Amino acid sequence: MVTGHPAALARLHADSLITDRQPGSGAHQITDAGRAAYEQWKADYGPPASPPASGVLSRLPARQHDAVLAAARRPDHLVPGIDDHVPGFFNQRTLAAVHAAGYADIRPCEHGVIRGTWEQTGQALYLTPAGREYARQRGNIPCSRRRVVIIACGSRKAEPSWEEFGYRDVIPAGHLYTGPWHRSLRLAADALTDQTLIRILSARHGLVPLERPLFPYDTRLADRDVITPERIARQTAALDLDDAHVIFLGGRGYAQWLRQSVPHALTPLTGGIGDQRAQCHAVARSTHLASAWWTMAARLADHETGKPPNKPTGVPPAGPRPPAGGSNRGAGR
Image (cartoon, helix red, strand yellow):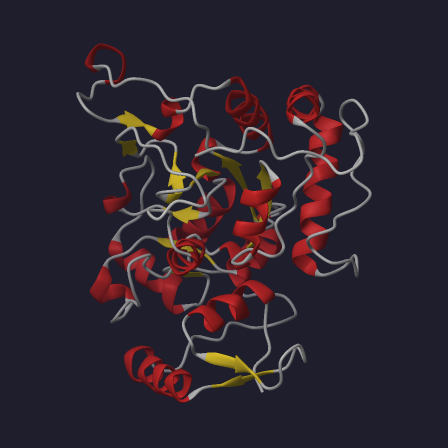
């Protein structure tokens, strides 16, 4: 039997590592490919570090302590090293010690399974749940899961401009989509979280950070060049969205597409395009409404509401009352 977070189970299904014991039963079992992958994982990584699960955590040495608290203060929970190109980085010895203590770890690679340890790969380190608990206990920092906002793309796009963007043929994703609906989604996303935690859900490229340069394109969900669900699953794994509170802003089609990998994503927008734009502008103006949305997202991630993740309820209305049935007009591309 295999149990775990629904998003993780969905990815294991997509990779044929688990299968349903009986159709519709909700029970999962490992496949031969899954057993082989697990044995390979143990050969690559060995036993994981196991920090204390409960009680008062011992205080780390000064630089390690500072590294964990520095990461806890960052919206993305990055433990900064010299290769991360951010201010206030820590040296390799400190990072290695924080990693060995189990308070930070690397994330999967989007393009495949990572082979080797953190020391071999040199990838960035991020706080684990144990690291967040250390920050709460030893730094009095209210460090919870990251707050990730995913917004739909849009069909109206800007033209490449060397003078405006500094690129000849490509445009940063954060400037590519110019339609009023997408700009409303972006306004809400900027109010809800840090820009490093915003991703645009593109029909061709999947989850795209704002700074990534893109060639203008025209792809819809029904087109042949649409990104595959397997690729989306790898991207959500690389972002570690199983361990994040997630809000998705966009139409129903894109929401259903994303839920294959992130079933706990909160989708608070309702009604037609005008209603959705009004709700986006309302949350951008109201910290109370933003807090209510994040509370709902946290409950979905923690399985505390007991309600299906694709039917969140109790979100305070932000705009005009939507008509029955809603609309998905204006879905991005």
